[in-house]
Length: 460
Image (cartoon, rainbow, N blue to C red):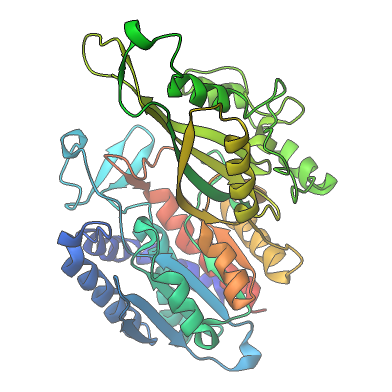
């Protein structure tokens, strides 16, 4: 089958592909807000209809929350591997609306100093990204009358609200969803210019703690110095979470943390990451992680412990000389390798309890947990896809890590026993989750072409 003909079809059909994306972006599929439940249903219906037009057997599957969309295209087994493509059609809320330059669900093409962009909620995360794959399939089908291999499409409607229905659905439908390899389009280019395949994702553990002391707030003049202040206890505990070199002090925290391979370290060094500019863009200058690690290692392959919020006592206008009865903090851990989030939770709680003085107690509240994901690049699909990305972008594609957490990649391994490739075309300034989200037209266009090239390489 001719790849050049497919690429030409993509180029010629870009205006129509853009209109389809704009149509999908007009649906306000905000999954976390019950007021938009009908719109999430409408987005799922839109995708089912579009997939059916491509020859897929597609259906909307109910869940206790928002529906899943599952579609299948059968091809002779000799045509190549069975691929599963995952994306999500739900979007983040748009607040604060006043900071948007236009209606977030009235998307438009805008000219910017950096080129044309598609402006609207979901343009990059994740509707624009998932449509790059569907448009590649559309061009391939239009040119050849079929698709090059067996494909399963799996689109979720709750990714932006914690995916409560995802694991039960995957377990119940494991035989139907299982494929040779999964493709996930929810990431970006490295430094907005280098195509990348994410092979490492950090896991996440969230803990909230409340330190209790006196039975009520106290007058600091009457009780100060004699009564224990829970803010003092809490800040001491937090200060002790790191040593002078930036290492986390929770016992057993580094169990399961792997060392980076020489090959991967060399490839990351070749990316010439400018950490001074990276920090300078947010008004900082000095890396604050483990002293013996490079900035990219800190972001992609090392675990962290961060305080995300701390409060207690009087924080309003003016001044109140109060000795508070309790103090609170939210603390998150990014995890790597085979770190066990359950073991770390227990170790952290034991550390806190062991640091409490007399007259103080602690109350914990968990905020979810997920292990890290690490994909094996031994599967031939990885090198084939890297070559295809290099061909399209004219820049050597790289294997990279991701500082954030995309649990679906680990779920594919845990529940379906399949590796996942995370390939996306977002740029650093796409403003996902923020007002004025956008997706570069270059990313949309070249993303479609990239998937076509990957389908070609994967089915040779």
